[in-house]
Length: 85
Length: 421
Image 1 (cartoon, each protein chain N blue to C red):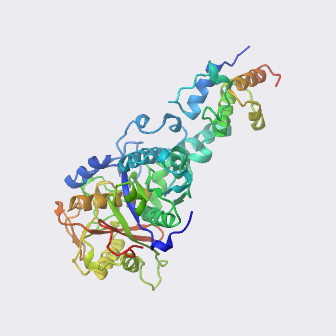
Image 2: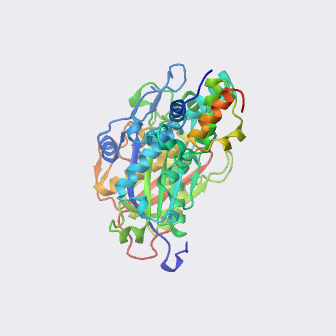
Image 3: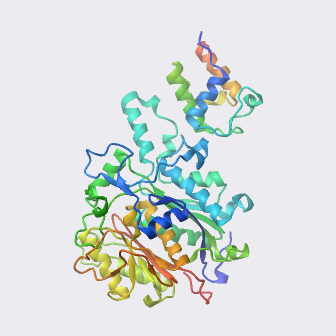
């Protein structure tokens, strides 16, 4: 089964919202709120669109509230991939 | 924020310039181009324009924005906003200001924009058309619209005072200065103002064509000839200038005096509709700006013309200048022949260039025209820069649809406390 990792999340975030303040999603940043990491709600909306296009799972807009941190986002997206969210 | 009526009308000093223009990125690169007549106009290279009726434009050199714009903001914003973000950083640096040192609610941002983020918008609309709604990026919701640049500059520098955008086509750059002065009067000590525009994608160019005012020439040196017998439209361009405007006493308090110069007068008018018996607004707008500056026409050392390169519009402008100043009595110039008309960025760049003319005591030339059209009885500075003391400058701008604006810039703050608008 396809897995979605923190590295995938980091790649998609840089693609949609840009980089240059490196975010270490494999480290402690993974549990920081996205807002603390400098990603606003538009970045998360864009992220949801990219996950949908690349992985073929729909992420409803109201699900964004269930992914406040990178780790929570990865968990949610994996749950969607497994068809249980 | 308290109004400062008790100290007389508020004056703003222009203390920082950030130039991003076809003539150069940076003050001295642009100024050297203007003085030596090095044009920024060339064949459109952003896309294949060979099938379009307009094939020349003033393009900002394809600078690598990664060094000038925060990486976070590059995919979130349009090229027009990239140019303004780079310009705002440069202007603040030039003014010697670290926004972190100032109260966030006393800093404002007001820019001019005439087309919004057309390149970003075209890309996303193409995705919508080819691939469907889910392929449109979320940032399309904000990247295209006129206030996007103001908003991004405000967010980036923590400037939370009153912010806005003026969408008045080519006149917007002057109207933004007028608004900056109002905000200073309302208590803002610093306003990031000016403007940029960048509409040289297929959609952006096509949107400019219906006016019929653009030059279809392929000859760079002859494509944009305002006031000339061969005037046949203007060349479009991109870029502009971002300026730092400070309440004058605040600028003095931090030891930068009046910076490059002060805004002494501003006025805006609106042309009557086509066919109206009423005269164009330009003459009265100039007179009002001078009256507000408490200056006589003879106090003005140079006029930066709007220079549409349309036979009728040129005549209207030349006649207004002659009516106010006397035929041939004031040097007139239009360095924008080297950049094309930059819409929201054009008048802001003219203001920046005029401030440099005051700084160095030299009137830059208008490059291109050689034989003035009948009725254009103005002293158009052609060929070479003209050295002279430049104490006061009038900058004119007209925007498509009737917008008409004029500002009076001065090098020295007048001796009377009420000598400013």
